Length: 167
Image (cartoon, rainbow, N blue to C red; front, top):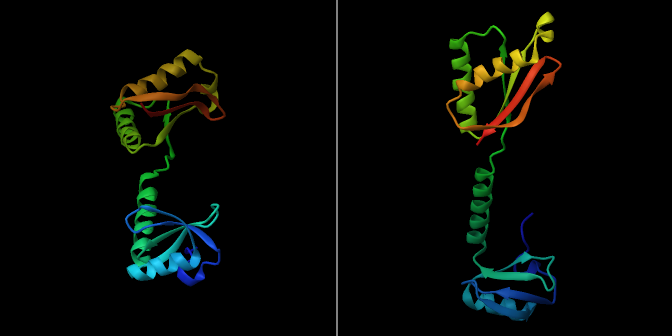
């Protein structure tokens, strides 16, 4: 939704901000329009819900450009972290663990959280819990990035799960 400008503004009084950001005070709509026209700029309603509404004297094209630039910067900075998953088994070899840990490190550097699933098929579900935790620890030793455990190792329907994130 674009802000109202010049003749589109329907309120009688406005708090007006000048082209350099200075506060011009509360003016009637007519006074504000005369002031903006004398400067060769537009009167832009930037906060219609305020009491009285706030308007700024500025070039409308430049104003839209700046607002678009701000919204793109905010969108760029807001990185949503995903939950990535790595699956290992009790018999996974050291080389495979190091490859999975390398990928885990990349994901942690990107700001994502990583869920490490120790998959336990069949009878392996009933193995000693201490042994299963050691298997997960074996994987975590290969992770090259500093991490913290967001959710400690616990039993899940598929086996055992731990969630880690960047420290």
